[in-house]
Image (cartoon, rainbow, N blue to C red; front, side, top):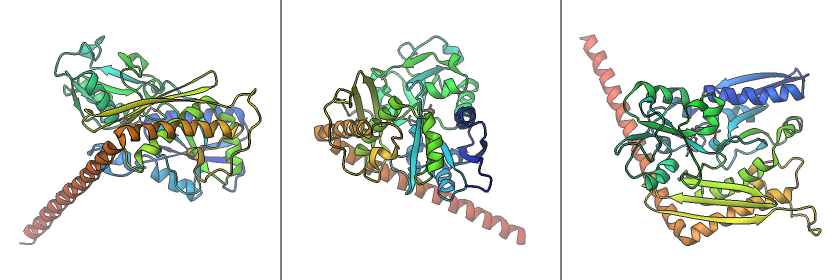
Length: 379
Ligand code: DPM
């Protein structure tokens, strides 16, 4: 905490989408706590700086979050606002998700090049190019739309729109509806992809607010924003991902709903070429008021509920959501997904090493040519 008791410092990425998200959260808090003063501190992250490499080949889990988390651990900021889907399932020691902010539309959407306005993935001509660097989207869409070509696209949302509209490389791009809506670009959505076509990413559309686990004042302030259904769905989805991935990014997709008092989760994992895949579902009763009295759960594990603090809610509901996700992952692993995941992890590790070797070679070539230039200049 700073010397000014009323000052709250908020960390965020610098990208326009991250700034919009952080401003929304800060505005809500400012309305609830008019005496507080909020200072927003924007930062660049590794993911923002490396633009020439596909995300999966960078080989770093906390691409969009590491620098922000360091500031949080050092006490330079009081909380950080993240797109929840960019946050790894394991947090650094001492950090927690103080609040899951109400989830926006969790689906993906197709944005067409202006020349294809009104078309859908079904009606795009054969050989049209779909821009996305999400292995999850490629794996699912390739199966449904084998007549299309899938090509990597990087950069923030603004850059991607520019690449789509001003070039002739891409016929359409696929993006999260939530990001498009927050940026005021809903009018560019040509097709929304529902889970029967393309299941979404774990915690897509939700915002996570991360803070220090021992910072009671911040936790209390953040608890005013938390959303029960969004929290439970994200806990179930993240438990599913964590059980599957074991420390490596793999193409995983999900679909969750809470009906009456039941948690429903469907999810899948795909091979990198999208040819092999395992999809299954699970249901779990959530605690209800008329339930017979039960024993309290034994003490909470350090990373219980995927580091989401259940402030104000029944922790039993969080525990059951977590179990729903873990059980689904175990079903999929047992059905054969486990072996496929081992292969994916080996392939990804090899790709990461190859990419590092390529960059190192390029660096050496660049170094050698600088040396030559200097030598020439001497002569
Ligand atoms: C992650 C993925 C992407 C982002 C992978 C995935 C998309 C990468 C790409 C984990 N993070 O979804 O399978 O399209 O090349 C990201 C976006 C948002 C948060 C943008 C987007 C905004 C929506 C939200 C990037 N992270 O997916 O269009 O709050 O969920």
